Length: 345
Image (cartoon, rainbow, N blue to C red; front, side, top):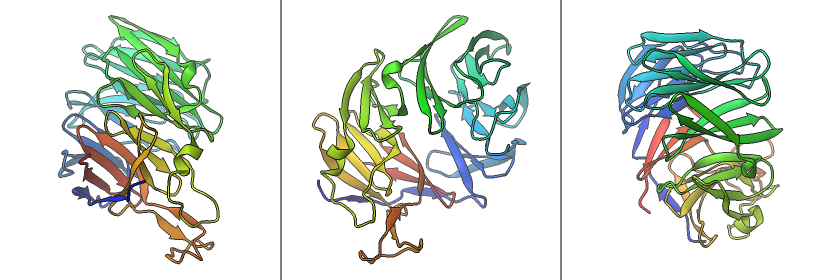
């Protein structure tokens, strides 16, 4: 493996309150802060635009989730017991209450050009609903397998008429569904070839998506829109080609991976390392070291140390990482700030 590449943060934003999540629109980044009712808007270089009170409702272990429409004019909010659509100035256009999600579960929203999709608990099964944005008329509802068992996440695909829905049941399992929409109708199909895989992201050319392991398997990537397994690399193949760090237990894969080029994936490890792998060769290209997010060694008592003889484990301050085409990484620091990095691969 080549030596690691250090990348300095190009931009950063530190909120007075700790940022607990963010979503990326076409021209805006929206962030929420822990236990606060506001939404913060930033531009693409993390410059502050505005902060407004959206009366966000924090449930017990069910934080609110936000998304933004493709034209950056509407905000969707999924809370513990309600779905809301609002304008960016905070005017509520639609609200639907539902049974409260159980702890650690939750729904999500997804905007298309003319519709919004959302998941809520139903009386017998969780429900996937599609609604028109022009008149807020519900035009299709589908029952999903299970009730109050999953945390749901939508994923945009390169094909506007296709959407991925991830249903994560904690440590039990993870299921990926393919939603197809047409005028006035949606269909849904379980992608069994992706069973127990954690969705990562699409390649810039849209022909592949990559997944992380739910258990101890390796990295797998799949073709799209015909979803077939296109390749894989095991954990042993990855870590046999990485310089080991001194610790009580060896490093292993984390739950996140993403494409940063058509043939290059970034893989996060439990120690906080970011490994770049060429999927054609299966070789590690390099290791990325992001400013302020470097892996740190800790002794058995949990104190930070650089003494190899005392290091028991490693961790970094990286809590969330997203690739923004064509060449940016957006990261959330454990302190709650956002950082942006420019890639030159």
